[in-house]
Amino acid sequence: MAFGMPPDEETPLLMHGGSSQASVARTAGNIFISIVGAGVLGLPYTFRMSGWAVAAGSVTGAACLTYYCMLLLVGCKDSIAKGGGIRVHTYGDLGQMAYGSIGRLTVDILICVSQIGCCVSYLIFLGQNVSSVVTGFTTRSADFIFIMITFQVFLASFRSLSSLAPFSIFADVCNIAAMALVIKDDLQSPNNGFKSLNPYTTLGAIPFAMGVAVYCFEGFGMTLTLEASMKTPKKFPQILALDFAVITSLYLLFGFVGYWAFGDNTQDIITLNLPHDLSTILVKIGLCIGLFFTYPVMMYPVHEIFEAKLLRSAWFQSKVSPSSKFYLLLPNAVRGLSVLGTAILAVSVPGFGIFISLVGGTVCALLAFVLPSMFHIRLCGASASRHSLIIDLVLILCGVVFAIYCTYTAVASVFLTPS
Image (cartoon, rainbow, N blue to C red):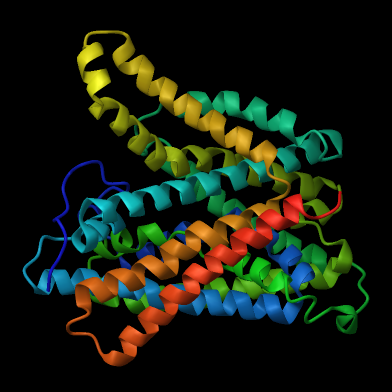
């Protein structure tokens, strides 16, 4: 079995799993945190645009395929360990073992784009909801995005995740609270009954639904890190299955009830449909605060990669001495520019739903389905069954076609739809 280059210490995108002391409960919580994010708030809109049956099938299918491919990564890692190879800690390490430096670079770029995509979706959500709370309208969301970015540039200078981690947990607590409140308000809202809901809309809406569904299970790059952090890694598949069952059930309930309550008036971020009362305002504020402080955590791997590239560049090493004030100023400037770039993207994309469909259908689909299958063929092909190899080939083919088609439909919805 011919492997690529062994992993090196050249700036892995994700930190190593740590001391392998995480309990079953903590691992289950970490999996939940790594998957559930702002994307769930676009699910009711997806149910509206594609129909409840198509959306439900897309969410369930994405969950099953993502779970299967996550276990492929774990299987590849275990295969390397049994063969006496170097221990694999991250997705990037696995890419390097399979395809050398090109494999690592590809994985790191895709994870980087995926993280930026999450951050852009957070900014879109923050801009629309802060504008809604302050002004009652969402038309000035761009103004609030750039106001918040000034603070994010400051937070980007923090080089320790430990001071930011509690805010990430707070964000997920707020997400769950928001989901519960939305479901409660949805059930209390007048509706036209189940018969008024469309199970299917158009063929072109199917890729949109699949893209959003894949995005909602984003967090794929943390698979090996989470598995390696456990006291008993053998229990990881069972814990992962339990988490996926719970998360999928929540997604289906949240998406269907939101669509059932508001029908064709369902907006691309469901919180915008909620009544403008005190409890809703408080939840929006809490959710916005949580996502605001999750943003620097999500951008942390991006900052690490960009900064490492700068510090290793020949120009920097020859022109900037460690004693120079520019030694810290330039890396901070790179961090600030990357944050500004996400703000520009956030005010440029046409809508939250279309954006998360684009990210989910391209980058996340490649990370979740195509690369794991390619790595499995490369690293485990000699010992794998013909059945599993056929599944790998089907996933690669379908994943690439799906990514191309989702990209086309998302771009076409922006440029080819009459305004």
